Image (cartoon, rainbow, N blue to C red):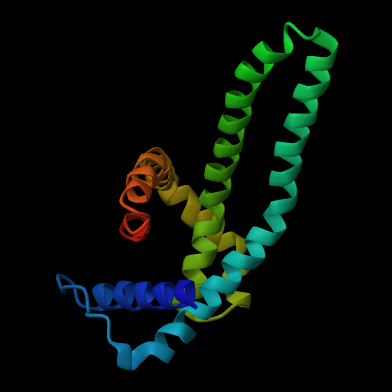
Length: 171
């Protein structure tokens, strides 16, 4: 429920800022709790479906990489296997991150479209997604890289604050 609520409020904020140029963020209003939930439903479902579909190729990439590293380690012998893991594991992590960034460039417009149109079917307009991605791909990649680089150290700091700080970091 929390993700639906946050997404719904974020789309309320985005719409309010778009309608009134120079306006401040509207306050979170608990009286609009169900409105926020309903507003966040379509983008949440869109992200869920996209995530379920993309879980297969992402899992294949990760498990295929692990299997390939294990097979090469078995062929290389016991002395070379640790070196292979030290080199191969960071490369696998980088490949997975690159795949995630690439996919995010094309899934972001679908999620945004679902949230603004309040329609699940309209989210999967691939022509719109391609046009959107061609216009803002640089900004999307930079934003994703920033989040990837800052999220791990901030999450560790949040966890060090007796696990309470992780909630502030997530925001």
